Length: 248
Image: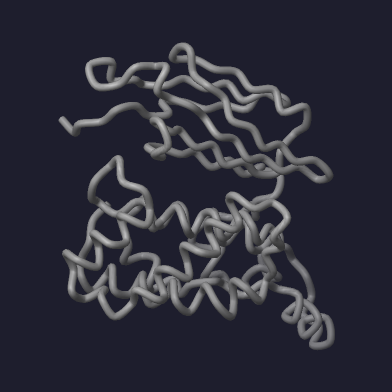
């Protein structure tokens, strides 16, 4: 059995209220040592607050329905678990492989539309391009695939801050010291896997954008930040994960 201090056992949104339950290893952790940081954003509203835990359950009323939210469980000042929420109404309603592989002609044929060259060109210009190739995604662990699918859905709906937060969370999946912060996890990865040592700058860049997206609400995250700065570096990181055969 893995050793852990505490984790988010469940998190459900009911209306404007998050209802959470925690699994706490009382032999290692006191409830008073735990806190929850919540960052949520709606259409015209934002919620950023820290909550101290007093038991294994917590209800948080945001006062609005969020488009996305990130919830971080901390022991003292160390993050030990997190939960990311995205509104289903903002996600592309297609099966997972179709997000990346279904062609425009297949979509049009499926809904019975008549092909028109002018309209096709217009639609092609509007269609979001996939962030990562399907060949890369299918060779990754399922947990990473799920986060990449969520990131693609967020990108399709122009939720660029959410994209960056999701990509940053993939770095946190590295199998190392569970209580370590992301900076330490990157250092462990570089020290233990020579294959990644030439990519320190790339990993630090991904972390930098992820930290800004998570902790600085006034810092704007633009589409170009993702397509020009983050995606090429993150693609290299994913390819090296496949080459190394790392597991999460």
